[in-house]
Image (tube, rainbow, N blue to C red):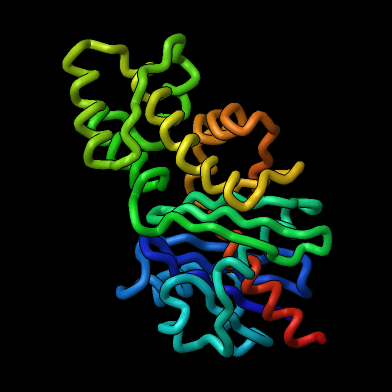
Length: 258
């Protein structure tokens, strides 16, 4: 039996096809979010090469900002619930989830049964998000995919104190004008992200087992900086960008079988 989960976020759309509630058959990410062709594009990608069609899906659940705009969905579930379900599937025993997305950051606290007890979200400002890192990478003229490598080269991280993206950008430009090594600026940027994201985790309560999800967790520098800021090891989900869609597919499976 196959179920489909679709997560339409602000800056990207994700989808997962799940077999029997256990095996990921296909997953896809497109860098197009809600209010555009994101849902259609990600569905094309996730079905590509599988031999499956929409008719093969026993149930379909949508989540994310654009969940109400997914015409094929048979139900909608909040991204908080879906992220909890997906993170627990990939990292059993998780007590706290930190999701760093393109436009927001979410911290979620779970109880021992895996139920959401508390959550906090930064969705009013780009500070600490993937967007923040993207802006800084452009100023520094370093590809996003290489930012983590530059972080680990640093011996003397530069202070980037501003949590506002606009002010932090000015700060980075000023540091460049003073010939501060780029790797030290990158490390400062990562520390700034870690400070903002960790503050959300502390608001919900730091559990003994923290799992990171979202595109931000693909940057090993961000993961390391957050681990050092919180003083605990940090797990990264196996498929960090599609954890919400995975959770939606798991919930779809539960609705069919229970």
